[in-house]
Structure formats: structure tokens, C-alpha cells
Amino acid sequence: MPGESQQAVDRSDALTAMGCAQIASSDRRAAGVLPPVLTAAQAYWNQRDVLASGRERIQGLKNAVGRSVDLGAAEWMQLLAYTLEFAPDLILELGRGYGNSTCVFTEAANRLGAERCRVLSVCLSNDWHERTVTRVREVVPGAWFAPLEALQANILDVELRIRKELAAARRVLIFWDAHGYDVAECILGRFLPLIADRPHVVLVHDMSDARYSSKEYGGQGLWKGHYSDDGPRHYVHIGHIVTLFEEVIPLVDFASRNDLALHSAAHVAGRGVFHLRERDRNVNSLLELATAGGQAAIVAQEYLEAGEPETAIAALEHAREARPLMPVAQYLLGCAELQRGQPQDALGHLRRAVELARHSADAHNALGVALHATGDDAGAEAAFMRALKLDATHADAGSNLAELREAHGRVASERTAVAEACVDQ
Image 1: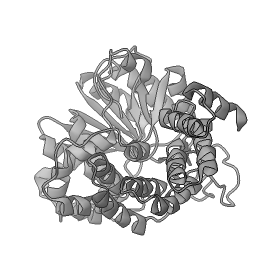
Image 2: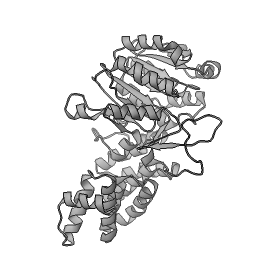
Image 3: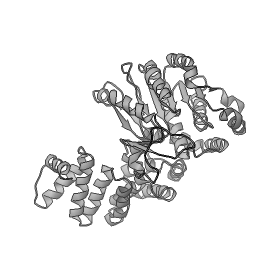
Image 4: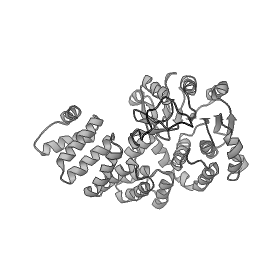
């Protein structure tokens, strides 16, 4: 998720809060020109009290829309938290369907203040007006709709109106949930240059992180370049992005041309890029919220950082029961058992993690640590080398491999160990 970007007119930050891509300008951030990127995990943690206190309203809105298949509880929580943390004055929703994200953004605008934040929603579908609005009115007062303007229109037909709104805004959040190359060209080529000189973020729906999902074809065959509602669900994997939709091509192309890195909310949660700022006063409430919002990995990572593996395990067990094939939960459970001094218990979780996420260098490195702790140094060496094969810059795997070889009388520098790992496999 991007933050305060100040770039040339052909550059922009973008994020997919729901799954895959967060585009950040790595070169200028490294040079200190741009502020640090705001992540989904940071936003969720910072807004946890707001999310906890607003659970009944959020659940009521979610039930009113009645389309959890389009936007799950985890995404509702994550999207609301990020919007509140970013605090835009204009939210541009491009595609809304039945209105899950419309409700999230309108709720956020109300919490930020209707006089400070507006929502402009554009979609071809009329499902929001014909089906959802009446049901939402049973949950919220009429004034709740004040920040929202929901247009039924082709985005390209109202492009001039949208451009005018973007030019006048000071801080912009764009939610990209409309498909096709023409829409992608409009967003990347004509909308983003208008806001490149001010704080902005683009959230891209319908993309997932390949590191935390199956890489098998599943009998579905090859992706043919586009998706139709009545056709088979052929997914395409590009880098660590998984999607059904063709806009991934111009999105990745745009990121490559502008030297922008792609990150995912799932990966941010798994690696824990933020630190515990304060001890939460109500652990049980926080764990309930994590389970309800599907964000147990974020909460668990916080408690691992704080040296509380038992609390982390309590959160992760809920996540594992709900989604037994979630690799990040298996990985963090293994890390928690290692932190507890139980490497034998960690092995099962970490072996499952590398089975589910074969391209995760973190998981292979952690497996190596557990194997070494249980006396299997040959297996540990192979795991560390696999981690380095996947990520030659993985500092922990490099140092672990060097230390392991030194312990066996095969002294080698960390750099040499990395080089060997990259050549040997």
C-alpha cells in the first residue's frame, strides 16, 4: 500500500489490499525521498480498537449486502482499517457489484467525517440501487448515505467527471474492481498521472499472493487471457500474483516500467513488518477480532515479536481450524513452537508450510532451524540452501548455513554459502 507519493507524472503507487500487489517506489524510498509505505498490517493494528468497537455495525452491513463470496470478513476488516488509517478526502470506487466495498468505504467516510471525505462509486451494474440499498437502510440511518454518490455508468463514459474530481482532491484512495484492458489503460494512463503529485493509494481487488495459495492447475487448463462469468476459472500466475483477470498484464507492465515493487497484504502479515507498540488490554477481544476478520496471522506475529508464543498459538489455532491450508498460519505456528523451545512440534507445521508454499524462503529457513534443533543437520543444510535458492538475499538463511557448516568443520563465509546455494540447486 502506497503512502505519500511525490513522483513524476508517469509514476504511481498502488496496492491490492485483498490479495496481491502493493506497488511502492523502491528507489526513491530507499534514498529517503518518499515517506515509509503504509502497510495493511500496520493499518489493521493501529485501527484495532475502532474495528473491535464497530463489529456489530460492520457485521450488520455485511449481512445486508449478503455477498461474502465477493468480499470476505477478512477483506472487510482490512479494507476498512486501511481506509481509516490513510484518511483520504476522496474515495474513488471503480466497480462495486452488490456493494460490499461501497459499504466499507461509506462507513469509513462517515467515521472520518462526511465533510472531510467523499465516496464516488462508478459501476455498470445496478445491483446496488435495485437490491442492496433497501437492505442497508434497515441497518443505518438515512444520513449515513450522505458521503456517497453511486453512479450506474461505464467508467469510460464518465471519465471527464472522474478526472475533474481527482484533480480537485488532495488525498485520494482508488479501489480498482473493474476489469478489462480499456479500464486499465484509463486508470494507469489517465487517472494516476493526475494524482502523482499528491498522497494517493490504489487498492486492486481480485488478486492473490501465489506464495500463500496453490500453484497447481487443478485440472482447469491454461489461462486464455481473459475471464468470463460463464466460463471456467482459469487462473494465471505472474510473479507472485494470482488472478483470473487480464488487468494483471498492464498492472505488472506498469510496475516494471516504473521500477515499482509488488507486495501483498498476506506477505506483510506473514513476515511481520511492524512492531508491537503497546500491550493490548483485552487479549481475548483482540483474538476474537482476529478470527472474525481473518487476520489471525497479523495478531499472532505481534505476539511473537513480543515474545509471547502461547498467545500467538491461541490466535493461530483458530485460523488453522477455519483455513487448514493457510500456509502463513502453519509457518507462524512453527515459529511459535520454535520460540517455545519445542522444535519437534515445530517440524510438522513447518513441513506443512513448505508443502503449501514451496516458494517461501522464510518457511524453508525456519524448517532448517527446526531440523537442526532436532539433530538432522543434513536436512537443515538442504533447507537453508533451498531458502537461498529462492532468495539469495535471505540474511538469516545465509548466516544459518554458514554457521552450520562451520560447526561441522566446513568453514565458509556467509557470502560463499549463498553463492554455493545458488549454484548447487
